[in-house]
Length: 547
Image (cartoon, rainbow, N blue to C red; front, side, top):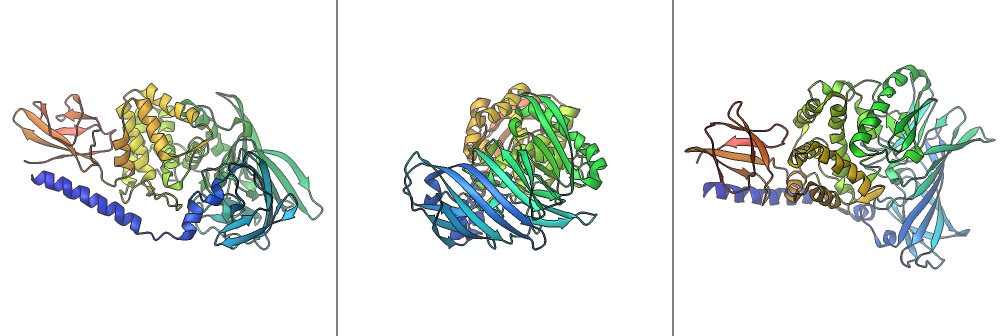
């Protein structure tokens, strides 16, 4: 009875904790406009962007336009376009005619004069200018980075995942809808080079002492994946014979960093081979792969991965796992490139499901280690990262208000996936699940529940309460056991209702492995062993209790 009361108390505590976490935030109309599929977004399907932007370093301003091509899904006459203050929209045109608009915080509502007919393709052009938000701590607190390199030359970049792409250009700033392709035309002062996404089609010298770099992306791209990288760059190229043929590789570093960068960026090729092995073909062969030095730590910009880890292994020279394995490779090259599969190929529809990006990409780190150094090394790394888990709040955030969940989406999420791999119990089947996922959801935006359902289906086992436990609960599931005459009794505790995850345990100090199928009810195990420990590959606790 005492244990039952304890279980009920914990369940009540969980409900109160989850509710309190949600109530800790007072969401505003601005949060809803930013984070939900509003009626003014829902009626049109984004098809294409042409972003034209002039970057003026002397006064830290941007000016330009975005042409937005779209398909009408159902008739409506008001369109939401997002642009964050202090930038401002100056004019909107359709078919050469100026349109009226009203501003509501960082959202603009444009009144279309032309009747919008279902099935038709239309376009508008949005003109804008001003000083964009300056990044305080990129990439976490994002915006524009206006810097200089060690030689005094301008070194400028964008990083805006959490903040949103509308921090520096007008767009439909919600992750559910991506353009099918994009053109990015960036004008910078002569002597500087812009590196953006996709392939460079042309460079045009202008009479006013500037140059325009014209980049084309032929694949769908998420808004925050679009980037500018401006500096005195040197370039070199390579190719990889990958699963879909020849993949073009381009590397960009500041001119005075070339020697260090050539040595460090050599890690890109084995990384790409490792990730193609685990996840399937690199998702953007048509746009190539680029690795670009930036004045901040790094980011997963699609086909234009950015790097600022100081040309050293580890995470800023540290091994996050504490095992030594993390010092054999450059964290930013490996982690940010892993996002090409999980973030850029498979993209969350709502930032509340950011775990789809970060849990799988965190897990890709130990898969990379496993590919190069063996299974035990990979497992040691992911297990070592458990010291960084806080279990402070649920990993899944709040939907429709642009609210992500706990940072545990990295290390706890990676350990959740490592645990699920043990449940699957077949390494090749597990690899095919990961490869199949990137094929099934190729170039798609997804809900987290879709990924959960896919994994359950492919694993041949309902994993829903496993996901609920690790993604939506802060408690670490605990296998309780108590000694009985002739063996043990055991059950899951500190867990969600109906939790029934199988578990491999060791009986005795060095005894045999035993497969258990615990539930939240006591079960009996006949054994002569006097102790029970969990296989370290499962992220759980084991504790002995007394009757």
